[in-house]
Length: 620
Figure 1 (cartoon, rainbow, N blue to C red):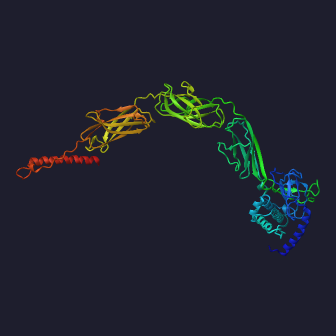
Figure 2 (cartoon, rainbow, N blue to C red; figure 1 turned 90 degrees about the vertical axis):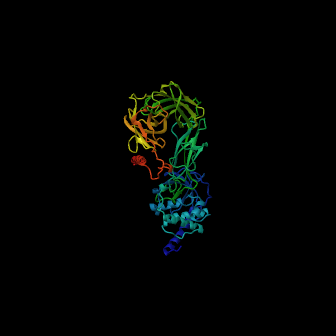
Figure 3 (cartoon, rainbow, N blue to C red; figure 1 turned 45 degrees about the vertical axis):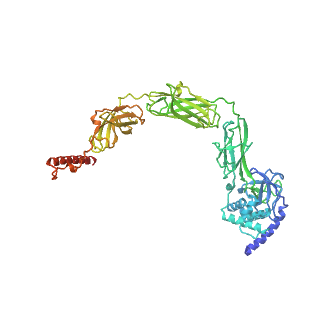
């Protein structure tokens, strides 16, 4: 480092100052074990132990109980360059605004730089972590202390970089790592160094055989760790295991006691790395038992939390034993989901069965299944429903839905329910409710509405030209089915077949249309494709109308009149083709056909031309 004349003078002055400090700091103590400690607060008193480190710099052990023995809770560095330090005395903890000194540390910007140095040096970091971060792996403890103390004084008393009397190159390298980092940073605030961790216990009574909780974690750290005494598996609200080393703020934890039946209690502890004490100052009196003041105080020191310090909190909970098991019991109440009564429209709907249960094991999965049966004879309808649930309490209720289709008009249906443990629907039930006479689990389906019987009529035409004559080699015919007295909004299916008027036999030529009328009266079309092979036949359309899409259901209307001309089409006869005359057919004279023969041939040709022309028009 190149120094100016002014810098050299300051360095010589710094050297004289260091010599004085060596005399004032006293003996060096061996480092002690660091344990977790509670945060110290402004106004607390602490004991300042003997300095540890090189002769010109040092680190003070701080005991929060105010006594000179016992575990060391914190450490502290000097804040005042030219003020003598005292050890073996009790100092008072304060915030930054309670600082009694008069150097540059009164500047909030300088305070931010010092806090940055504390947070990124030893012992806030372990010696190994600090060495790696500073680029000097294996740095000694005394070198780490020296580098940190010089970096603090560089801001509190110099505001410039002096030629410090570094003991080793490692100490100097670590110093420059801290200074360059602090210079590049806007500095830290006490709030940024704050570490919070707390946990709340469940307020509701808890019982074995369930998930006990929730315990709610609160922290300002990215993650905290959690432990339970005695050891109990910890899950989330769904019963899935959680990573106890990576719990986050707001996370809810549960003790998994689903396999336990006995009463007990446990303490759940949350732990975060660090504490909020880093950056608090300790004002030290010049005489034992004295009160430090701005004009009369010993060296002011600043606390730093060691890397092994933890902030923790705990919450406890107890739970009762599982009572002697009573048999599970269920009861049901079946209603129309649309209006809550027990009468369903004739064309069906959805019913909800509310199953009230008692004496279930909380936290254990159950499945309830049901079927609607006919009250008239107890036979099943095949209408089923199922719900899987995990009760939080022994008593409660769940719902099962059943969708009733059309086709049950006029019937009374009763819900039969069975409760099983787990998700299986085939195992033995632990409870059932199958009372055919229970009015609470019975719904009645309204009878079909009293309306005039449906009526249909048909009109069958050639789709090509609208007449009732089909070419000899087939085509498509359309039967317009007019209907009356249907129920709007109900699905219907009309099916038909073409039969021979000659003997009433079916041709196998069929057609079908499914529709939902918006009005009681209207019409739909049914198409039939007539293949070749029916030339010369007369075909009549027979139609049937059924409710729904089931073609095996009883028709609600039909039109099967063999003599109804409006639903009849005629298939033309196949054209007759004249045979070519042979040599033996020619007149013996060899001069050609007679006039009569020519006339007959002409008539045959004209007839064939007429048929062909008519067919062409039909297909155009």
